[in-house]
Image 1: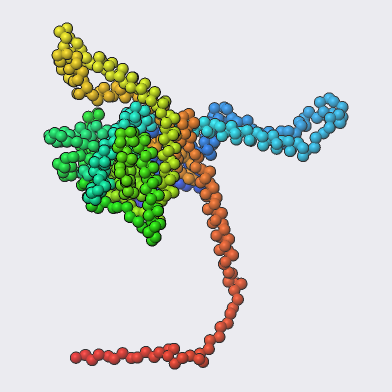
Image 2: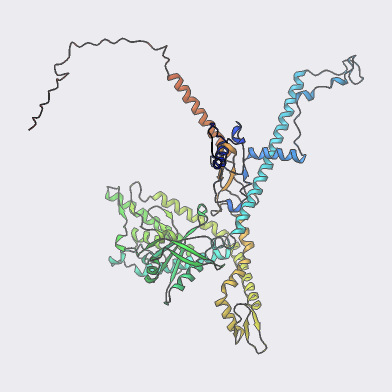
Length: 613
């Protein structure tokens, strides 16, 4: 009968279980070795699973970017396998003369004895060391050049892979297509002009009630809903799905999108503002919104927040804080008002509000509170913190910032002056590049018109009697003339035409993407720093082809050496502060109880026992 590891007899049906348990507890060959097993396919942790990184969809996870030390090791191994090994440096032994060529009579090479001066061995060794240092320096320079080229090629492949995947996404096209970015800025300018006109209508310096809620944007006076949206879903898809759920007419939907988050799979938040309360009431009963994407797949967008119109009575006003002197407070307020008006004029020039009599100069004797409200509503500038906001910050903000003058967290004249210098310098730099941008936009507009005419002609079929038929297989509608067919194509098949026009943007998008130095939407790139430090994430910067990232391993090595140095210092201090038992000196202490007070040791009173009844 079979027995287990303790010599006990076991039944036949339990033999397989015991063998499996023994195999599970037996050590693996890799774990029995004392040396560290290096595996680049996974991170160096107890769990053998590699953590998922945001850059994984755009690179080969099994071939990450190597740090310089790991790359040098791989480079030498590859050279050995390819037969292109690095030539060894010349040593001092190789510089010595060959003794086999020296004859017995002391004559070297058949010449006369002592015809050539013999070099001392020290000079030979010194010259050999110099040659070795020169060879090592040239080899190090060559290795640095090859590693930099390796990093450039890897980073360039990484950003191009990201481009190919997100080339048709809305966030990417709006940011890097010159024409679409121009259209987006034009819509923003139109919104600012409408907001400025509405501000002038609501402002009345003689009526104190009209100043209440003057800082609220027009979108903040309407209900709002926020959605968590992936990058492949566009605003047009969301608007179409929302309008399908409502049969009423006259519903206006405005969407404000935030920038994509590279750390959250390029998701973004879209704030939906509408004039119809019933739309949001019907959606508030649901947890998500159903949207049909371009591939006719259903996607459910999670609702992350809803907001009712902001109460105007809860809006904080500009107040003086931290300033006790009245004259000093009035002087600071006058300086802040002057700077705020100058900032408003500079921003009005960029949006052409000064020429339309809708700027800050059209207001009669504006106070600091009025100028701050104008800057926040029209130009999305927060006077209290002296920073530029976005429309998504205005719409998505649950509360308004504290508007205080003075104190440590209040408004500062120096901050407003610095921002004024910044925007004036930005306007000067933008005016220099404006001519080139306009030429590119005009070129793209002409190409779009050509694509449009070609698309209409390719999807139109003219009959002999002068009628026109739609060429789409799933449509094939017949119209009286080509004009009615053209209207039909633009109304029912506009997405198909837009898709063809976006193909023309590819070259311009690629050029802008590769010339961009920041690339805010690009996730961090993983670099393998070996088993000691594992995989780290670095930023990819630079315009093509000089796209680079910084090797973090040297800084990590310095930090570890600093930690080891501090640890050694602590150990030395502990050794110095520690006293050996054999070196301890006995000290005798004499206790005297002659002068003790009478109440030094109070006598405890006995507790009275309670009688049991």
